[in-house]
Image 1 (cartoon, rainbow, N blue to C red):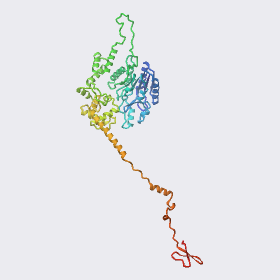
Image 2: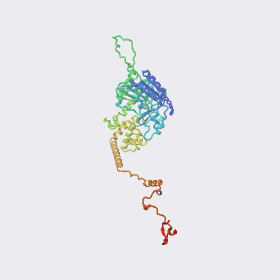
Image 3: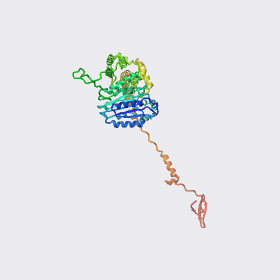
Image 4: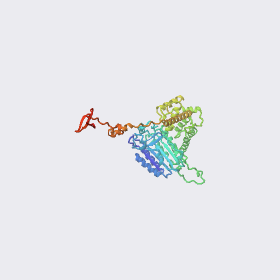
Length: 506
């Protein structure tokens, strides 16, 4: 089974010249090789999901499944995204809602023991990525043009495996070329389904052709975890049967394998490019000094002689045990770094943070180890190169990267230990502060509540609680006196006559 998608006519970006025609060429190539193809051209978000779902169901039990995509793609923090034609990327959330993540393609491949192949011609210069970068916070930015390398975990590999092919090196840009199809897809269609050529040898041929055609500006590559040889085309080379020979004939048992000079040259070149050693390239040039790959062989040979291969660290936490001659290492490190040499290292966000921490640990000032190589990081790299008698281009070569890691191993361990200690002290201080500091209780507005209660039931309406609180009786101005004729009033200051009787005042 195969899924083939080519997106050219973007709504919010300039139209790409070749992806639609590239997709049609690949679909035709795969159909001729016996594949059933789910195909789509200029698909929007819904259309891409529809084709992907159809392919997932159809390929579930397939022995071999191929996904080919041509169009715009981008990487953010080491993750890759494919862009439908209707995607407008102006906010960080649009990565989730308007693009297709590469992980979705990998999830669509058949389970073990099926073989999955993903081919990405999606490394073109991308204005959508630049638009998106302006909306991302500082901690999340497009780390480089093109696509990031995809790590294939060994735990996911069975007897089948996965191969992922890219139109160019990680972080680099591929080209549409001047014809109806891109140089990469043109070469793929030529070699991918060649009889008797397994896919890894076919991709080696593609790399050689495209590198030569673009004068080294575009170098296709792939990473694979295949458990066996995989053939897109027939597993055996096509042969033409000759006339029947008699048993006694000298040519009766002649091999039917092709023995043309071109076929032999191709096999020798495949072996040389796979081994990538001085001896193998010299062997090729000795047999084919004017061969189709002679110029490329000489170019690779010059690079190997000028910069002998230095064993890179197996992982970021340990030193390589390979001894390298001082003079040879110096030759390699003195190579001027460029954006291309640094992108070939394949630095994802975590490796960039690691590198920034190493620069800080050996005394270079950086704004922050955030995984983004801004002006301060470039300045630090340039200073390190200058202090080590290297071309201060601010871009690393692979061997300079290895040397920087080796030189900073001890310092970065101390730096990280100190940071961990400081973080632990801060954590303990924060915990102690929370335990000892108890917030004061909030004073209740008792008086205010009393005032509110009094406002509802005024004090004047309440009954006095004690006799002393009772209101005094009004003082009378007169006395009432009595005699035989009745009562009469006198002033309160006077006494009633003897014949009179005192009465209450009023």
